[in-house]
Every structure is written in C-alpha cells, then in structure tokens.
Length: 296
Image (cartoon, rainbow, N blue to C red):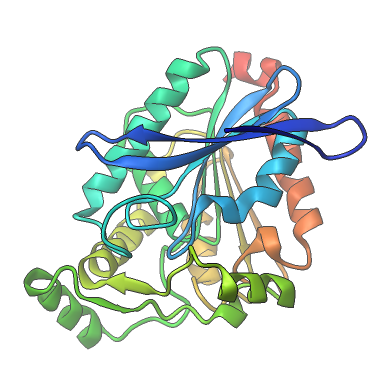
C-alpha cells in the first residue's frame, strides 16, 4: 500500500509497506519512506529489541523530507514479522537478513549512496554486520548501541544464561528495559506502553548471543572502514554510553562521536531530538554529497 503525505513547506514523501523473503523462506514485514522528488541516498534502518520499524515513522518521514529513501524491516519475532516472539535461531541469521536486505537495496538503487542505521540492539546488529561483512557502505549511523548494558549483569549470571541457553534456547524472560528510561517525553513512554506490537521479552539464546556480539564489536572498530556516526545520550540507563565513548576513542578520522548531555536512550524521541536530527542531517549532507563520494 502506497500512501502519500506532506511535511509542509513543499516537502512531500510516500510511505509503503510490503514483505520480502529471507534466505530461509520467512516473509519479513518491511516499510519504505520515499521522498517526493529525486532521492539523494538510501538509509536502511535496523530497529531495536522488542519494538518495530514503524516506531521510527516520525524520524523516517523527516529524513524522506530531506531527500532520503528510508527502508526498515521488522526483525524475526518482532512487530508484524513471523517467528517466535523475542527469539532468533542464532545470531548469524540476523546477519544474513541484514546482508540480503542491503543487497536488495543495492539492486533497487544502484546509483545512490547506501547507509546502514542501527539503534540500540539494532546498533549491535549494524556494527557487527559491518565488522563481519565485505560489503562496502557509504556510511554507518549508530545510536545508543548495545555494546555493553548500562546495568552490567554479573559474570555469574552471564555464565548461567550461556549454559541454560544451550538447554532452553527459546525460554523467554523479561528484557529488563524500564520503559521510563526510553525518553523524557511522557508521550513517548505512554505510546510504547500501549503499542500492541511492542513486547518486553528476550529468549536466553538471543540474550546470550547478542551480549557476546556486543562485547566482540566493542573491540573491533579497527575493522570498520566506512564513515561512522555514533551518538549516545549521557544519561542512557539501558545501554552504556561509556562503552560507546571507549569504542570510538581510537577510531580513525572517518568516525564521529557525539555525546548528548542529559539525553536518555531514544535520541530520536527525546527532548533534544531536533538538535540530534540536525547533527544527523549535517553528517548525511556531507557523506551523500557527490563530491565527497567521488573522493572517497
């Protein structure tokens, strides 16, 4: 279904949804926000744990209004996609899903710069995909990534979960996300609480593999050769801002790190979201610029 909308000041975009098939035959739900005019680039957005792509509708609409196609799919067991809720068969399946999604993007938009944007668990996925893959991207955007958790589990708990995940991989537990820690905006908190497509669980296997993948990524920034914008709120009580700062400390000049003082976990939904958007737009304006791309 294609729906055309306006952001005012002659900025128009369309929103559509469909399904695409993974390598192992699952039909995953996807959405596309496209600008009314000629697009400048394509942003592939990877959402976080327990949520779904449409929670980024406001953000994606604004990006489309600035000339970018935004594509997002609901992970397995999330949103409108099939699969056991809050579960992944294994971490590699997610890497395969992202890889195929990006390959389809390259085929559909062969002449446009392609960006990968991951938030929270989606940041964990995006960074690990780039670290493990040979696919060249024009840029990576990561916000509040799950490299480490703000409230770090004890080593004994991690070891116990790892053992149990081998015996009961699909056992679901509370994902430990306090909804009030998402944003200072109480409207966002209320919408999250009442969203029927949001869930509050994670399976033992998913937690164990994502936790380990976050730690591995935190030590592997040297494997990232594409431009990277990483942003984190200093008061994030869900994922560790300190881990993000440490991650970028020895990065090349292709990496830009911005720490937003006082912001919570969802920078795109918090009180400084307009400033965050302006920073993102400035970065995109540079790396989607034909002259920048030519000199890359």
